[in-house]
Structure formats: structure tokens, C-alpha cells
Length: 390
Image (cartoon, rainbow, N blue to C red; front, side, top):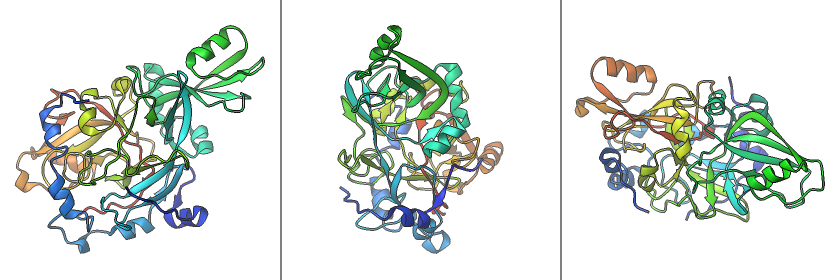
């Protein structure tokens, strides 16, 4: 299925106009992934000027400027984005600015971005990416709750049942619609809603809609800002400080095959959040068994690049917006038997062929996680041709 209401970069600029952008606790980590996280600084700094890896002729790859012209916006909350260097920008994946949304959690404000929905009609109305697989979170019970209050008081925010500082946190939330039957009052927590419902003052309609609303700021923390732009996971996923006046968040963009440009927000691997610089989402751990994920093939050696482990872009079976796509990525590490013989792989079929030939070994999670995979939330608000080449 094609994404809801996609539009090209040119159409996007005509509709919205351009905006200026001023860029501005320790975990026990598996050794393999930790070694590939922040140690790519020299490689990253050397290649950022051209957005093409060292040793690759820019003439052999589509340029970021060409990709920019062919880009498609998938998420209606995208305010602006760039896939090419300008105004001092040095990260080869680009950046994307998205609208922030506020909610209440236990009396405190939290902030999130909206990216995906399991329901086609809701995705179309809200201009989100339609991801049928996210519905698996319902049967598995691996979701939180978001309550959308109809006819509430003037300053009523949506209410959420969890946040990144909670052991049950997941960015996947079931949509509940709340209707007052009595005089409306301010609701600031799920407990407030449960109490009012029990008294008959309001009714709650629990839908079957699951949304992916990655949290960016909560009562005791927020996603960090990368000020160096030297490696995928170093510093943090944000490219600039949050703007709570304009209610926007600007993320680094990363590219994977095929043609999907994504952001990184949270992971089920709580022990890895310190190195990955994202939020911990422990409840997402059950999403693989729930069928809500798709494997992402991340290279642990081979051709140098700017993916999470410092090598070529990762490979997914389908592009964002297609029915098989899920932003909840089941992490699989690909390791070349002979790194000197590594070649650029750009499809799941190519990965499978190299594995069958014995050239490539696949590890659920990483080689250090003993066959245990983990989930990383990587929504893709932009489609565009891949610019990497080897």
C-alpha cells in the first residue's frame, strides 16, 4: 500500500515555505556493539563534506541534492528537512524537523512526535505512516494508552499511561476516546480517568488503533543533542535543542535500503541506551513475538559508512510505507567472513544470497547477545533515493 498523501520535496516547499535552522547514567554494553558506537569519529569527520564514504567517487552515486529533489514526505508533521549539506551542516544523512505534541503523564507534561498508525483511516486523517503490523501489539498487550479527551476543559491535554522513565514504557499506544457525561474537569493522569469513569462522569471508548508516538521529552529527561555529528549513535538523535516555543524537534536523519530515511528514538535494550543515546522502552521487548517488527540487517564490518555500527547503510526487506514495513526494527548484525571481500548489499535478497554462500554470518541482536535480538524504534518520515555507493 502506498503512504497516505505523500508529496515531493518540491511540493512540500511550495505548501509550507522554508524555515531557517540554527544548528547548534552508564550502562553495561555488549562489547561488539559498544566498540562500533562512538569510535568512528575520524572516519565520520573525513567523509562528511561529500556525504560519500572515503574512497568512493561522488560521480558513482546519486548526490544528496538529487535525492532531495526526488524525496517524498510520509508524515504530515514534518515541518522541513534537508538531505544535503548547507549552512554548516555536516551529517551525511541530513536532518528533519517535526512538530512536537504535548500530553499529560501523572500531572507532568511530556512531549512526543507522531509517526505511525496501525489503522489506515486514522493514518490517513492524521497524516501518519500506515503500518498494519503495529496491530500485533494489541493481542500481545505490549502497548501503553493514550486518552484523547472530547469536550474537555480549555487546557486539557491528551493523557498517556506511561513515559520513558517507567518500566512499562513503550512508544506504541492504544488510542482511547474519552467523552464527558458530566461537568468536565482537568484530567492529568490515567488514574484520574479511571476514577472519573468509575463514577460515571465520563465514558472511555478503547479503540483497536495503535500509534507510534516516540517520546522526546519527559519529566526526568529528554533525548540528547548531538553537537559533533561524527557517528550515527554518538551524542544523541537530536540535531538541535528542542524548541518548546515553536513546538518542534529536529532529528538527524539516517538512510537505509531501500530508500528510507529514518530517525532513532528508543530501544527495548535498556542496557544499551547509554551508548545509543536514546530512551529505554522495556515493553517493546515483546514486539518480535507479537509480529509487530521486521528484521533490519546492520553491518558489523565491511564497507565503511555511517550506519549504527560504522559501516554501509542497513538493509530492510521493504521501504517505509509498504505493508510489510515496521518502524520497530528487530536488530540483526551481519558480519563478513572475509572483510576484504565485502561488497555493497542493498536488498534482503542480496543479504540472503551472501549468507547462503557462507560469505556473511547473521547474528540476532549482536554477536555478544547470545542469539537474543532487540527492538529499535526507527520511524521513517522521508523516502528518497539512497546516496551511498561503494
